[in-house]
Length: 116
Length: 116
Picture 1 (tube, rainbow over the protein chains, first blue to last red):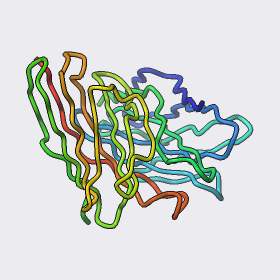
Picture 2 (tube, one colour):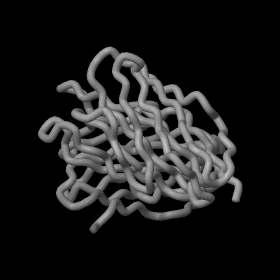
Picture 3 (cartoon, one colour):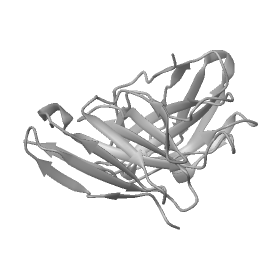
């Protein structure tokens, strides 16, 4: 069965600091990878996604993530965070192999608090 | 652009009551997913539908049932509600991934259910 691990439960940064949130998954086949952001009391919004091709993907709001297949990782990065980035971040995967149903498996989430 | 619409946004029910949550997918999306997110938890997949048929089943309790209608909207029916059912219920829609691999799911705003 697939699983997704996010290493940091809560990250606290000052504005302008750099951010890297870890995400590892376990699955032997081909996966699609996603990062979602959830602002307090809000729904999940897609930040970026990886399906194939260039392993470095750029998303909205200055976020990027790098897929490293050998490490089963898809870490999220941002060079300089803002107070408005305070939110919870979820890494998610689904199977890209034929015959799978597409439902997402989420990590436990990382809460990011940015101090002004 | 049209998004996934969920209703109601908030719902308060007493224990042992029933609740019905509705989800209207993005036009032309024929796959619907339901997720449950408990307080401070990651979203957990409940059930999905493709072309009005149940596609996949996750951790959905037997007290819950769901269906997808001819207009592709979906309803999640919850009976004998328990305090532990209090959560944010998200619906997501996508194009059938078996026809269009590497499609992404778009999430609705969620229904916050509080059982008292």
